[in-house]
Image (cartoon, rainbow, N blue to C red; front, side, top):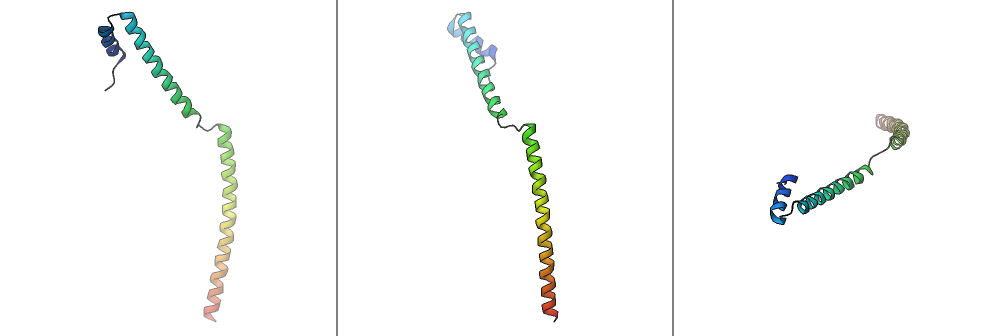
Length: 92
């Protein structure tokens, strides 16, 4: 269960008996929570990709794709050669 700012303020006002001190404590807690949220967001932003990163990644993928197609064709031709060789051997 999360306590709202007003609930914390009421509890502190009853305990401390000074409204200004209770307000300062609540403000401190809010600032600490906000600072933690900012740190978390900044930490997550560091891991985001920029447009330049994405452009480099796309170019790398295109190059790899062409390389894969080339090797697939080479293995396909070798497979056909092996199949025809075995066929020729067995049907002789």
